[in-house]
Image (cartoon, helix red, strand yellow):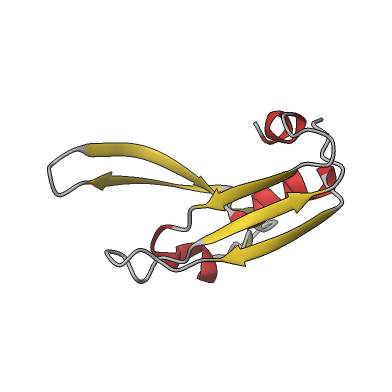
Length: 108
């Protein structure tokens, strides 16, 4: 998926990707998490569900870990930066960021 996204960007273009961080949980959940024994576990994504006030259910949504996104897309670009933008008023605890990549964008 990440390679296809990068490949779709034209020469000299850039990619701005909003990153979901449900309830800000990735802020305290490192990509590599120690285990009681054995090698560390990699946290790749979080699966979550949401019900709107009108009862509409959005089940099993997947939010990739921001560090995974950068691991995958970073090497395909010349430059990257994280941009912060205000959280929604309805969920002020949610961290809202976007990854901006530019320069050489090549899919794998």
